[in-house]
Length: 258
Length: 325
Image (cartoon, rainbow over all chains, first blue to last red; front, side, top):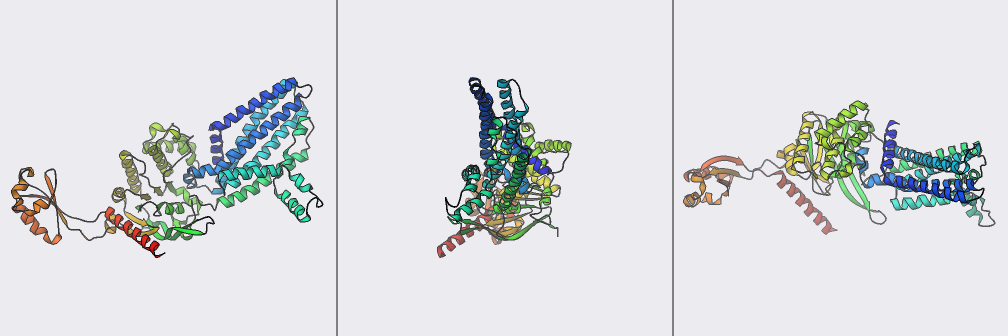
């Protein structure tokens, strides 16, 4: 556990010293400023505009970091051969992988938290107060973080056995497919063949369900998000990440590092 | 006989290639060897001979097609054994956003050292490899030679029993090479086992208790540098001077001694290569020519000659096999 923490801490340090990360934070702040401008010229829909824009920005920036840095977590270490000296230490490959995952998720948590603070400041700026209904925005930010953790796990899985470019494409493809899980499940056999409908239904259970993490509408309108959904999404993300990481570790543990 | 620090048994590595990865290229062919505890073992071979493949297999960076290996009496997949092993990869590269101190501290954290012990070890090791002045410089500003030194530092930081160095002299200037040689000799003095691969045969001859020569993925010979090249001498060498520094002496004695004309002159000294059977006759003739005999020594083939012979033989065999196909 200690060794996982050591790798995670170094991954966080790398991200903090990486200028790309800073530029993305600046981008987020710019988005917040845009939200304030748009909010100030809207009538009675300031909260909707700001929350929607803010959450979208947090999600997009987080996804860019999760996919691009997530894919590089393993592949960069192999390409630059920084991994060689590291694996000669008393460190198992699955510990390295888990540490890298934890490090990037922690980075995303810090980054997302910083952007959430900016979002709440923007909300306070236009509303001059914050109420209990705004807790929904906080839950929406938490769901985005859960979603990002899942994306990082998938990006790492693909980067364990394929090239970085393909890993980015696979992760992106799976993310988009995961946004349409309910549609896949809802396809009726009178629209398509029974066999295909059954196959798609099974596939929909295998695919990561990213739709469940989208509560932007509820948050923007200040509607409460049920505690059961919070528990369900937390459990789902934790289990899915664990399964993906186990598969990634199994592949990576057998990989020849040329 | 001392225990073996490294035992390799029939280690074989094939790399698949081609579109469907169905063809296989054998990079290492049934390597069997031992490195004894406390010895400095040099692993010699041309590029692509299988030196780095062997070391990577030992470090579990790649996995064998066949065979097995043990280090410090334990199977190589025993992760606990890595506490007692130091490894310098070939052409090492490290996290360039870290300083040398941060990098060593990061690696030291995988061993259970206290914060104070880590600080002390890191400072001491950086001083040992000549990087004390660059301790707080980010690695992206380091030259290739400095990275090599950092690599060496992380390999010996935790005071391991077995140190495996892949081309440790690569990228170093003469001063750096001298320092690495001194570190290897110090490790030997401390009773550590060192396995290192190199192209630089003079270093191997100077440092190694034993060497293994590998070519074409096969071990061609193992033994002490003096043993491995064989005991058969290639004649005798006589070192001598002529009266008056030899300036006009050569012409003066040439009629009396044709041998002087055969000698190779370096400054005031002459080197003469003769058959062992003709040694005493040659000495008599040189004495008759008033030559001052400085030394007489046996001429043995060097490690380099042996190495070149092995590599050439391997190339011929590979060409013959390719011709048969």
